[in-house]
Length: 543
Image (tube, rainbow, N blue to C red):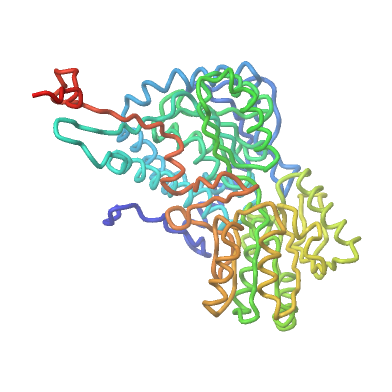
């Protein structure tokens, strides 16, 4: 255990050749590939096999089936909402310490016996390299659970009123929201999928969890882990199925207390609109928390560290095939810098190994599905036909065995070309080259070019330039990086979230997110109740 007053971040395993963790993980991947898991809905702690099924395949080998998944319909969704509502009173009565203990036990299990299982499922299901799986499915989710418990314990003291006059005791009860939270989770991070239903649960809410259609396998592992840790029935209900169908049932339920969402901007906007339409039938005003899209930037000054910039672009743009809402997708680079490091960036990009994540020499693997493959290759094809754009490396693709797209760099002479301003969510980096004396103007261009405001970074060796970028780009990124790639936020270090079209900026990995799931009650206890109804001002001026 840590001797510090707060948890420490979970150490990252290296999985170097010869290490036991490497052999154990390889063995677990072999085991998972040798079977087809049957994944049910989980409603009130009971496994429900609907008979309406789909399959889960590996993106890097889409002929290999990992799981057969039973999909929820309106009946199952209604039952899950009811289960969550019915479970809340007992879950609240259990008390904060007992709730925290369950998720801390889940963190301990994930740190130990379940680590290989969660990482293997994430590598096979989402085609993540071992490092990307380790920092996601293991470390970040462990951190979410441990730090959320830590933050939740502090609310009682932190929220108490400052003043209690003579004869009065004022206090604040950190109540949860009344009702259930609908958690709609993404494919790209197993940790986020686990955190979205569990963060509200720690403070006393109950959840209905709608996982992404592209990661049922890894998410089911996390659901099983939470049950193994002692999560009571009905607190989190697991519902694979149609997002629109599930949302429609949830939004029509008067006890909907909130929505915890990570996904696309259009989907989130539709959810918000539908919630507003449903308001007359709801008991309250649901809390809406969302992290959505990004068009994340890197701005380089002529005085930047060029090798650091090169590494940041490679890692920021191409790790996990660019399928991060924080991925470096557009860069503004001075002509002089490009003249010195452009060829190196291209050659290093061309050296990237891509293939099956079970081969640990690969830096990249496949994108998540055919829909993503078609969307990303469509952007590349249109850039190839755009006279303002030059594909300087990459651009190739192959979906015959897996959905593979080469890491691609486009140099655009138009700062508002399609791939400079639209979210692609794939391994595509677009670079705009600017005149060395136009740093101020390029900051303004960067600030205004995109509707998103999630992450971004500035590279400069001069503090004055950094500060100027900090000021001009104040609202352009919720997570701002100085001389580093715009990805890789760590729980309790860089709380994550952005504004504008990127979401509500409620900062997962901090107390700010947990506070959204509370509805505090102010309590005044009068020790000496007044026994006279008249006030002094009512006295007569006559003696």
